Amino acid sequence: MAIPWLTVLQAVPWGKVIENAPKVADGAKKLWGSVGRKPTAPQVTPGNTHNTSEQARIAELEAAVVALQAQMLASSELISALAEQNTEVIRRAELNRRRVLALAVVTSLLCLVVAKLWLG
Image (cartoon, rainbow, N blue to C red):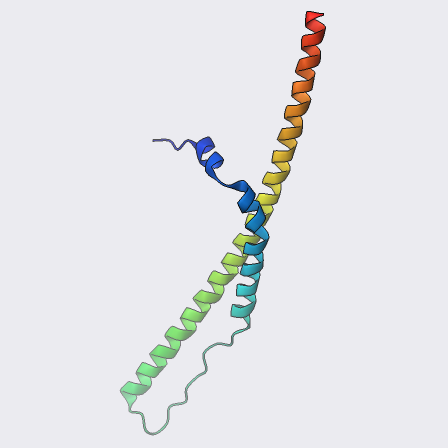
């Protein structure tokens, strides 16, 4: 079943989307800034008190933390990029909305002029 895209697009509160786009972009930049500055997990030097299985477990946990931090960094970078793209899409949508409105006004005026000339 096809989605009625026009209905979906009309249901979007574009005013609020346009109003909140800069906030979303700023939030994504702050997230990217805070995550990007965090250092990777410190390496624990095993002491004499740990046995081999505990050392292996610590090493596995450290590797998992590093992997999670890398995923978080990649995710925040993606969120930042998407927020910037969202801001650009909204800016262009608003520009197109204004152009369509201007075109509708010009077309209406031309229709009135043609009707007036036609009917004499």
